Every structure is written in C-alpha cells, then in structure tokens.
Image (cartoon, rainbow, N blue to C red):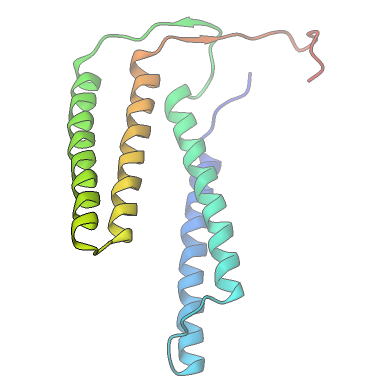
Length: 160
C-alpha cells in the first residue's frame, strides 16, 4: 500500500516561495540596472512566477489530500465520528460567506450607482468567497462524508 506523505508537497511550497522571492529580486535587479522600476514584467519574472504558481498549486493539493485522506488508505467503509467542532466551524464559515456575499452584492450596486468600479476589490472578495466555499467542501468531506476505499490485488484484471 502506498503512503500519502506530506514531505514533497511541503517542499514544493517552500520552493514556490523561493521562486516568488527570486522573481521579486529579479525585479529589484532590473530596477537598479535601469535606474527606475520598469512598468512591464521581464521574461525571467514571468517564468519564475509561472513555475512558482504550478508548485504552489501542487503543494496545496498534496497537503489537502494528506489532510483529507490521512497517511495511509485503509480498505473498507469509514463513517464519520460526530463532533461539535466541525459544526461550529461550518456555522462560522457560513456566516462569513453570507457577509462576504452581501458585501460583494453591495459593491456591485455601488459600482453601478457611482460609476467607480474597483475591480481589484471585487476580485479579492470573490476569491475569498471561493476559498470559503472550498473550505466548506473540505470540512464536509473530512468530517461529514462517508468514505469507502476499494482496493484490488496487484494482479487484478485492469491493466494499470
């Protein structure tokens, strides 16, 4: 049975932070060489940020998988144990989601009335709404959903 190890995702998160810092240093170097801060990104900065984003996504997926599935999959059905802490977390996250949704709707109405459209704030609020919804899905999968792990022999019928 294969183990679900958090070492490689953690290493990729550290490497992603290092690449983002290298992109920042590349921008500082360009600013020092040109005498001013350039308005566009260099090819090196774009490449470092792209690899950093891929490693960041891989690391987050690995750590979420480790959190949801544990170290080792065990065959059979697993039923969640009832607890009040996940319910309290869900209630708090739903209240936060309601407040963020109301603030987002109010911001859209404000943009329509005044003509001032702060797109960065709209994107920030919508991104945080998406993260709260993802956290709710993760809590549901971890604490409320029934899991079933099915395994087969190494010499099974399927050719993988």
